[in-house]
Length: 227
Image (tube, rainbow, N blue to C red; front, side):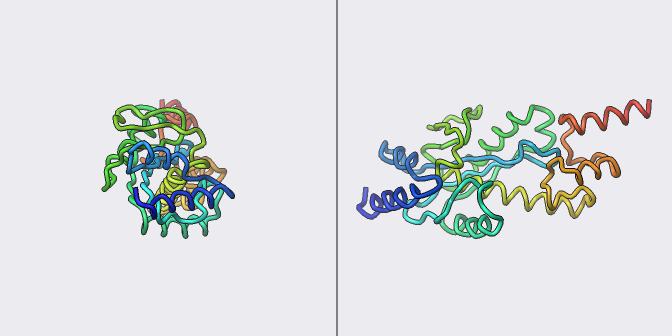
């Protein structure tokens, strides 16, 4: 291990301890001989519409963007700036599970499917994976550890949370152009008043999760009326 590499670890740790997540989990894995450590996080479990999306990120220890944190704790402007730095300096992959897969399995299983796909899509194969949460996705066979509230504790997971959120938000903006009236460009598919009003006025689209109660209830009521 080079002196520069070791110095980069310690500098990253000292800086991050001031606020937000740090590089402790990654450093521990490196010291155990696991050179390439990926952070994984997902976004989109709660919305009524759209896919669930996961990101996997392997940071360069010598070039970690300053200010990484749980995406929910950052302003939109800061997320965008950090995304640019992450994409330039890290290995990044996106995985998603479709609405059909969410309805067929369940949102937890679909979230894990998206995570496994994101990890598999990395151009640099990880030796170890840091997973946000307390469950290991089924089918993940490489070395891993779960970290509760990991997006606020691990810089790699924080980076993944930023990538996943922005990718999904942009995807929902694109879908909003095709299906206007639900406010997806602002609510990202969550059940806001505007979204619910759109459902009442316009009905259910192919991008709505039929297994979710509000959508199921609308479809069930429509079926009863038609019967």
